Figure 1 (cartoon, rainbow, N blue to C red):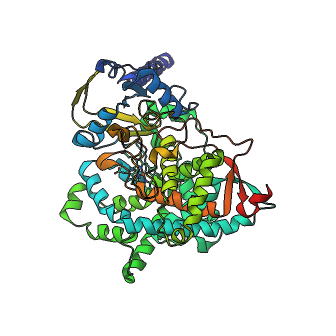
Figure 2: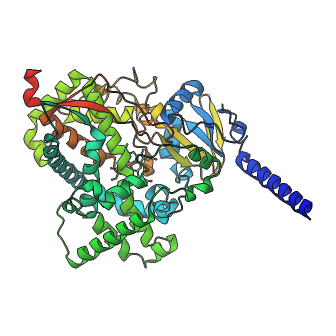
Figure 3: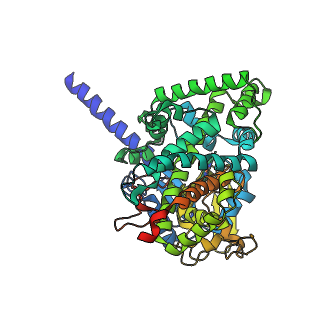
Length: 511
Ligand code: HEM
């Protein structure tokens, strides 16, 4: 009897093991069939078996140099086609968008995450995306920049208290995280967090940092999840309690807004947009597409998720570039000093600062890999590329690598804002504008109907912080200043703390 049980147990275990191996390797071979170079996968763990230790951005660049225009990588069990050829990128993201309109949906295990705009499918995505457009009008963007600058002022006042002498060791992300959270709460969602004391103790602040997995070291568990994606939902990535409390607060804000119609001269804010969407819940269109209250609430959450890493990483890396390039900093200071009044009322264009922000975003695209799923078989035959992508295959644009394409960008690793500088009156034709394909090598905000809707807003927010800081401080590179990316984080780039010194400009002549 015992023997029989043992035989059953061993056979069962062997069967399960065999099943798991077959499951993990199920798609192996599918990329090779396309006739492209493929990063050889590990027996079970795909092409990045050491994914918890590698810097994905650097890996992408290495593979771009090794394989060129099109190549394959197994992300665990998932075959991914990587495309760096600018014309093929244009076709996928813009011209033949009808073949590539969705992204892969991870099994988050939380309905709010499942309903983020990034992951909504087809028509449902289109409807929600178009409902959100009033938030990104020019006047909303200008006002956003103005509010961000005002908040920066408030935090700069606090910062002054930390100075013992004329300079201070400074970390941009640490400084701007509270500004970003307070701004997103207040400007998008009309939730006042500052009145509740230290924002770092606020539950929304904590919820956001938890949801973006801030401060968590990457672990081998993430490699296992690429092989068995259904395990993602079992990871304790966020506190359901925090999210539920946030959704309740949002309900309250909506109730108050409905009761007190406010006149928003700068255009609809997110709460108005939500109310309009909520009023459509019973419409045949929303019912047919399965748009419910959670779909709408998720977009409020999206405002934190979409901007958190991107804005904060751009600001951090820009503090480094400015500190490391004295001439560029001088030019910026002149531009800022000439526009003090306009900066205050949010009407300054600051073209050189804009070029610096764009160049920082080229060198440091926060979303290092853009993704689309091929929705119906698609063939591309141009020059030396001849490929048919099967339905269902994930297609990736490795932005960190394409943005350093040496055929488009001379000295690609150099921080050179002139690539984007159109002169004070905006009349200069930049080196990049002379090359029509360069825009599809600059993939920081994506392209086509599913590009980043927040790109113009993001540039304004970053500009508003830098402009305000340069009015009072200079950024100085320290001997121990380093720019290092955290290992083991796929899809996005997150930096280890980047320390620079800030020097009060009033003491500049004494140095
Ligand atoms: C420097 C800052 C930012 C960068 C570099 C950035 C970059 C991107 C990229 C690369 C995508 C994917 C585009 C594609 O697949 O073609 C994206 C999507 C998105 N971004 Fe941004 N983003 C930034 C800031 C923001 C901000 C501030 C918001 C909103 C307040 C925002 C909202 C979104 C949304 C909602 C999507 C999903 C779009 C869709 O699927 O239709 N982003 N962003």
